[in-house]
Image (tube, rainbow, N blue to C red; front, side, top):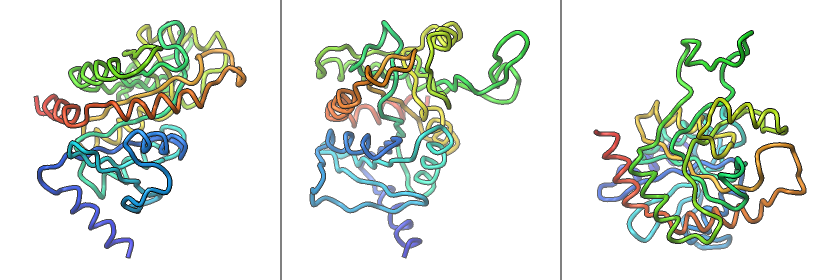
Length: 267
């Protein structure tokens, strides 16, 4: 049964004339916020979940003709990469989006802000040396950077800025970390290495790495629940960030975003 379901999913994804978008989040609460933004709420009699290895896709048929599959893939870059790759192995997509809530670097991305990544960077993938941290690119072992199509970033930021209330929509570098920052010293060190950093999260690079290996463009969108720095759970505003995530997915220009990302990749 599972094999037949996977094959049917692939057939559906290859249907002509429709755009296909995969959204990978970490946890079910983020998936629910994304689906609400797409017009699906709990209890809707919409399409049932589609099984993929290790999880299931929740599907929303967006009115402009874009099918959006949402997958809660787990926390951290390894889980995100595995989940995204599993979905990409059984379905054909035009764009993969890493989405969810995250920390914002003050003063650029305040709590409640929406962040669109100009660059997706693995911030702690490397080695400590006597001269300081060296990433794997400096060590000659690979890449720590994926760059979404600039035209797609600008398009999304403009649409989100027109639709969203303050705080602002922000573009810049989104850092992927395996350990969430919990001190002012580490926050300062990250900014020193990545001066354009506006947010940190734990999944973007994993999703982008999987997308790259399947030949699909990637994109990252975050809404800010807390400032990056000293760990203070009382200052977190997870509900506000989830509400902002819902608004963002209600406002994204889906057909144009997919077209722009595909054209940039072909170019």
